[in-house]
Length: 112
Image (tube, rainbow, N blue to C red):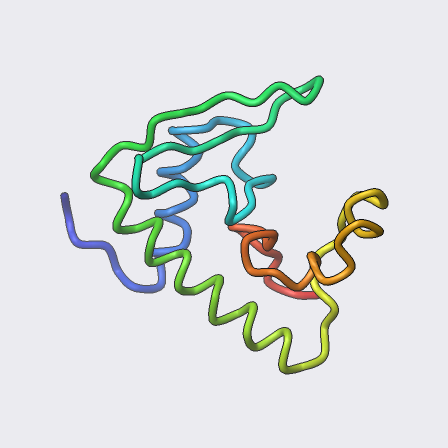
């Protein structure tokens, strides 16, 4: 694989994931990734989930992305942000869930 300039790394990760899960990658959460088994769980229409194998060659890049998301999450929490939006039923049952790392977006917006 060719070396990728650092400023193009985020876009490179997005392009790789688009090839693995076309059309669904913007709705992925941290909890959708199982790096141990190299599986990505994609939630589809009608609450139907599907397991998609992750190519071994992109797992290191995805793990790097996970570190970036973790750092951003910590920064947001220290700045007083209250986490992600959840379904009402989930938010009522687990009031602290919005701040849990596993519920964060894998590709969060650049600006809040």
